Length: 265
Ligand code: 2AM
Ligand code: CA
Figure 1: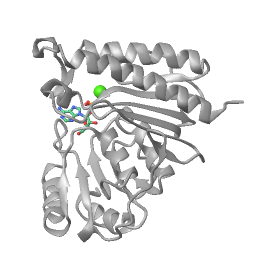
Figure 2: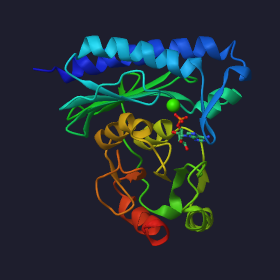
Figure 3: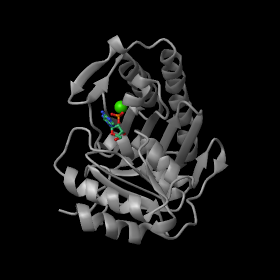
Figure 4: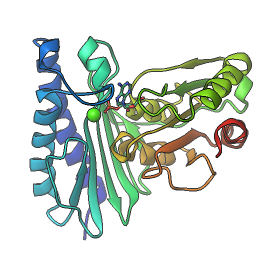
């Protein structure tokens, strides 16, 4: 039987170790080391080295689990359990020496997240949760905020950077929120965005063209902290479906209705 609390604490240790490697490399990193693996999609030896370290250690922690990892370090996919890993979420920020950037690790069982760890490297903040166990930041329980209306909400999003097919409706939706909320922020790390909704810094977050590894760590942290999630259709395909709406439970319905007005196909 898997003891999830213990596994989660050990996974936090792995994320912190990878974070220490990333922090050490941040001090000596040169832009010449960056490769472009797709349009505006960057990677370096830091992403790959951190992923290798994470994969090796997680394999020891739970040998029956497979891997879905951004840099493709581990090939095999598990039948029931999978670690879904972004070794460095916010690579563009990292390259420019700008916070936040994070190690994101989710554990899925039959494609649903059952454990999540987001370690934001620059502030040394480890967010984590396991199913039914609550959500925590550096050992302290966290909850979503109690703001209940979009007009009082601070909203996080990610700008389209390679898939522009929803650019026009995205900009129209952004304009709505700029006019009718406390403001919109674009931090550059979906993992941090989800963790920050979970601890009440933001009320809501939406983005499209995301990958499973960008969100698989953060989604359970948000749920366990009292938040709600869906894809743009209001369904629950938000890990593999490439689009996400996330908010505290009080503002979620109003927020989703607005996002759908602009972005639902
Ligand atoms: P990554 O840094 O791990 O690639 C924010 O928009 C999300 O999109 C991040 O989680 C980020 O994950 C991903 N992303 C990939 N390339 C990006 C880019 N050029 N600019 C912004 N975000 C990017
Ligand atoms: Ca990454």
